[in-house]
Amino acid sequence: MFIAYIKGIFKSCMRRCYWMYNIFRIRSGRGCTIATGARVEGKGKIVFGDDVSVERSVTIGCALNSGISIGNGSRLQEGATLTTTPGTTFSAGKGFTLGLYSRCFVHANWQLADSVSISTYCHVFSREKGKHGKLTIGENSVVGDFSIIDVSADIHIGKNIAIGPRCTIYTHDHDYTDAAATVPWKGKAVTKPVRIEDGAWIGANVTILPGVTIGENAIVAAGSVITKSIPPGTISAGVPARVIKSSFK
Image (cartoon, rainbow, N blue to C red; front, side, top):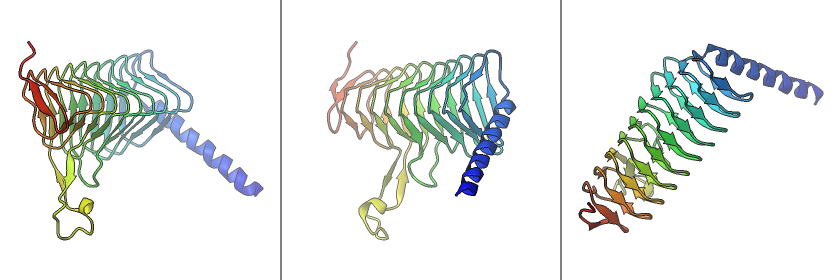
């Protein structure tokens, strides 16, 4: 019992030393702070701009031949997770925020512009094994608390976009007619990209299904389910969502 305890203490100390070693490998600018208890793993290249803040219990995993680049004045809040797989890149501009306990698992190249915020308790990653899309988010865009973004196919989120809390963006579905499936939800995976154009406003609890484009400056009311593309400059609402006002200007 005592020997097992000592082994556990030794392994814990070695792990902390490994994290500390990787923290010193980060190429960082002036004024960066990394809190005690942050975990940094992997053999990839991590580059921080000036005044980047990494809070306690943050996990950063940068796999071999992958890269993480985060711009000036960015903040990874307590408990957040950001990891890359081999051969992928994650790039965020200045003023990026990854909120409390949010998780980003990068399986393809992701590019986020300046002043992008992924709020608290968000889950951003592919939800279908073996299906990996690219994520791009334009400047000044916000993803609301508790939102889920399924990056099984490419997702483009433009600039100046507000996505409310508890929204879900799906890029994959299953072919329920697949004869080989034992149950409908185990049918062959089908992926389609999603686009949200500049200036769109997505209300709380909205679900966006695969293959949808939401047009520039469109508004989607809270609680809607988007099954078809939404024209620019319109207001849509309902389950499924329909245009209720063709122009609000």
